[in-house]
Image (tube, rainbow, N blue to C red; front, side, top):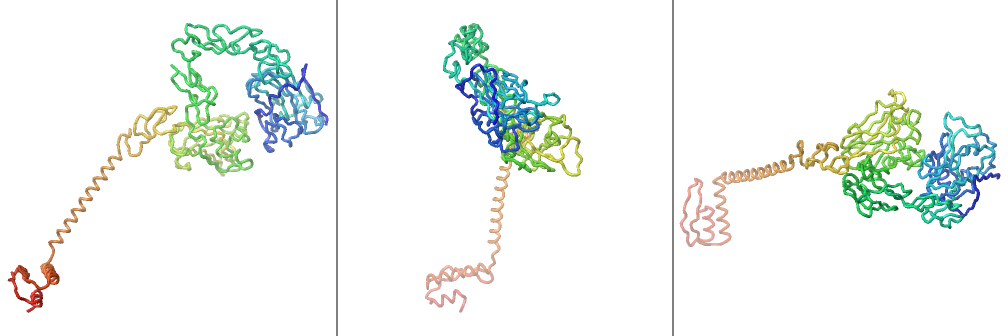
Length: 624
């Protein structure tokens, strides 16, 4: 196989320098999606493998087709001194020659640029090489360029802009097809030489030229050609560019770390006498920072989070609670043409919104050719909602008239409901006015409502005429839906820190605090009526009256029964008693035995003596 290698601007070259890019984090824009992801992944260019420069070997980066821009970078994880960079371009294991005209691999390599920067923005870095002077006959498959610079990110970039005239040999579209990018330099600061083993000559030098040892940057707190001078008054730190705090009597702070050795002036705190220490801000440093990303501190004066918010929070101060974060979700007609996790409904509440392309695995994607599209998130209980933010799928390309996803967003609706059915909920927003040129990719919807489910809905029904610009079918392609409100009932304000004014209020207005729903057992405009006490008292009174009424009825029935006994019943009762006495006691004398005749007159019987048992029995039964 023919292979052309070129070394640009190298006076000396040694493999003793370490490959700082090996197995570091890498990123590419527009990864090719027509193959398995591992075959085209950005990390293939820093895996240390370069023996098989074909896409099928999984050792190369492959970008998508038909793009006007190609971008790839590697994060070295820290700022390092770089000596040189080597690029191994895709050859597909065939001879590297200009035989395939404008669409060969050499034609795709032409026009690239290579930058080293401390950020992912190449405009803030140094241009190491720009290949505008190469042709199909001169550009190599393996290119090494000298780049004596310090930086954290190495950025590869190519473009084929619309309206720009490029040389005939250039490919029609932009590609990055890197099989390996090696960044050689010294990992440890303060050293130089082939093995990075010689200390820089100047004792306060942080980075020196890797070949000559000439100091390129002083350690914090020092300046001068040989780093022999301390920072001037009022300055300290890296490059002597940091201001001292308000030290007492305006004395100079420590030239390296900025500590005020004599203390602070009134109104300032901390070792450096700055406005506020990490985690605090505002007057007197009494306010707490919000949930800033990676627990970084906020701006000492206004409290804004300079690094963004932690997942689950939002707003300028990162104190607004995203009630939808990582909650249960559902979508109708999930797209199944690719890996399930790339299009899952849960992607809409995972807190990620940096990659708005389906291949990033951060977006929801529904099937094609559907008349309705429904997605919802279950907040798990009824919540007081303030506003909703939607990030729609953009494909990581410019949003607007020419973006193919814009027509799919038009006409959507958002509901808040206590069930999964939108019909019984509150309509927060219904798009009837947006056009391809006015609908935003990120939209904020104020929705002061109570509910458990937030429902996104769109439709393209047959027989219905929709405005120009609308897609033919319905889609839900949400990359993130955030629902902001108070996670705990009974509180309001932007950070949900103020209790509702009415003590028995369950939910109050998130801005004004006006009660919207009372706690169980309470009612009234200000939840001042204890409905539980009133109803309980009523129940007690009714119960007591029922018991008394039951007792009265029982007494009346009893008395009535006693009064209604007939004379015959009374006579029969006495006879039974006398008979029982005879059988129980045998023959004996009977005295004062009263017999009731049929005329209800009482007759006193004299004492009967010397009667037989038979006579007694006859007398008792009235026989002669």
